[in-house]
Length: 172
Ligand SMILES: Nc1ncnc2c1ncn2[C@@H]1O[C@H](COP(=O)(O)OP(=O)(O)OP(=O)(O)O)[C@@H](O)[C@H]1O
Ligand SMILES: O=C(O)C1=C[C@@H](O)[C@@H](O)[C@H](O)C1
Ligand SMILES: [Mg+2]
Image (cartoon, rainbow, N blue to C red; front, side):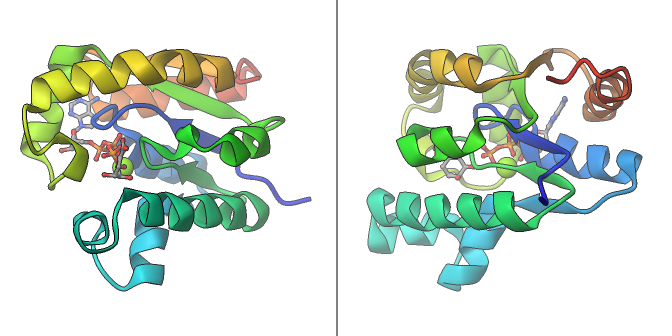
């Protein structure tokens, strides 16, 4: 059966997309990101889906994207930060190599400030991020087969340490 070599989860700004791409290169495998899959299906960027169709519609598309990618993709798969909110997605992740990228609040806020628009963090990004991280931390932890700290570390360093853990069989 086809399964991703690693599925990356974690809050916005933890580096799932950035580290995921680097890790895939390092492992010589393909990279897939469910946010990009959803954008391709909807034909518009994530923030436009939130504004025009609502978060629930986005979560439906995202749950479909995760289900398909888990079944089809054999490389590195990065999920959207909130994909784990759906119970069906949590169930599907059982048995996979699930890597939780941990990030301190300050680093996450700095990182998302540098990147593209995130619809859930438009107003009061720091307090929204704090609440979102507190709500999701137990979920990320419960799903993880490997937890990787990213605070104060370059994305390439994080990717390298994940690759080493996978090589040593420490990933689940
Ligand atoms: N370890 C790191 N150190 C410094 N900057 C980083 C690190 N990882 C990612 N970044 C930067 O932080 C920003 C957000 O990273 P990225 O988009 O990969 O996060 P994400 O976890 O995929 O977020 P989302 O849940 O919104 O998809 C990017 O500008 C990226 O270059
Ligand atoms: O953490 C979240 O809920 C999100 C993270 C992004 O990856 C996107 O999936 C979207 O902006 C929502
Ligand atoms: Mg991402």
